[in-house]
Image (tube, rainbow, N blue to C red; front, side, top):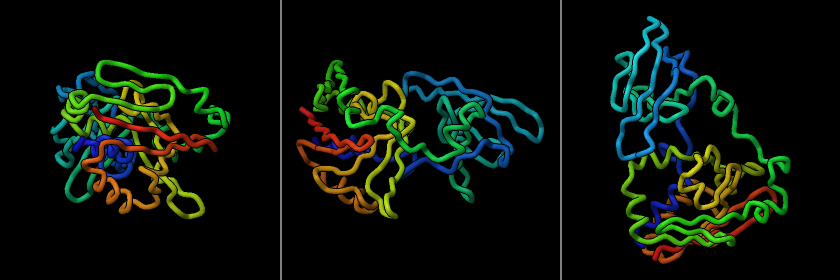
Amino acid sequence: MKYVIQLILYFLVGSQGFGLPPATNGESLGILVMGSIVSRNPAKRDNVALIKETATGKVRAVKKGFRVLNRFVVRAITDKYIVVWNQGEGEKLIYQSKYSNEFSTPAPNVTPSQDVSNSAFLSQRDTYKEDGFERDSQNNITMTSSYRDKLLGKELSTVLMQATAEAHMENGRIVGFRMHQIDPGSIYDKAGVRDGDIITSINGRPLNSIPGAIGMLKNLKGSNRVDFNVKRGDTSQNFKMNVD
């Protein structure tokens, strides 16, 4: 199970490190994202975004690796946003205007009205099973080595774009990492993690700092089993992951 570290990293990192790049609607950059066509096969790298250059009104289709305004390089394209980069400014996330509520404000706090009461885990304890991957009603996750290798064979950035993790603070201290923007059908979804869940510990060790979390994850290499605790509302549940 030498790759279990990468699987756990999927639960804790965004597109570049912890969280996504700075988000904008693109007006300040002179780029508007009008829409996108996203392949269901991550290995194909043929996602296309339709952008508008505001200074000229020119509309064009771009793919990963294309240059925009002779200033940015497109690094990623999803159904909601694109990520562009240049050496001087780093990465910028440009979201489509119809998704502005997801990116222009902080991730919402989870409240009981969002079904995260004491019975939250009981009410959402579904199961999932497909060839090589299974999660039971007690959040025990088992996958075959071939399923893991297939998962890790996908483009890493695509997998990471399927969810976002942000450090969750309480009383000025990091107490875990909150998950949100989880795509339906993603590895996070299959594992039973929901928007608003906070991953608080791995193998009993608290996730209370970014450097500490990274160091702990590196030490997991070679483990045959990994447990991680998830807080949903005021209820906690232990998830167990095994690779056969």
